[in-house]
Length: 165
View (cartoon, helix red, strand yellow):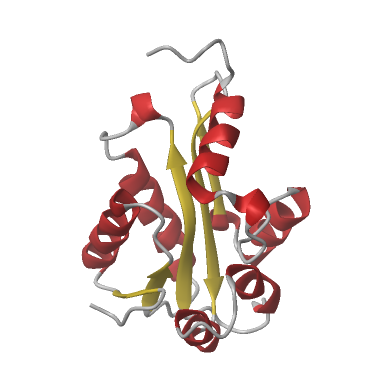
C-alpha cells in the first residue's frame, strides 16, 4: 500500500478528518490532550492506541456515562460534546458511548477493532453496571461493528435517532 511517505500518525489524523469532519462540526467532540486526559480519568480503558513501533495503527475512544445522558443524546437533546462534558465520574457508569474507532487500512479485517473494543468495554464493566452501548455511526462498517460488539457482550445497543435493536 502506498502511504505517500506519511507517518501512521499523520495518516490517522487525515482519516479522522475525512470520516468525521470534526473541524466543521462542533456538535462532535473536539479531541485534544485535555479531552484525552479527562477520558483517561473517567476510565483508563476509554482511550486505547495500538502501536507496533511505527506509530498508531488503531485509535479507540469510548465514553462511559450514565443512561440519562445516553437517552438525551439518542433523542437529539444534547450533542456529542455534551455527552463528554456532562458525564460525571462520581456516579456509576451504566452505558458506554462508542465514540470512535479508527484502524489504518492495512490492519483492517483482522479483528483488531472488535477485540480492542471488547477488551476495553469488559475492563469498564468490571467495576460498573454497564447495561447498554450507544453509537452515532458514520459508516456502515462502524454500525456493523457496534452491532457485533453488543451481540458478543449481550448488551442492548442504541443508535442516534433510532431505537434499540
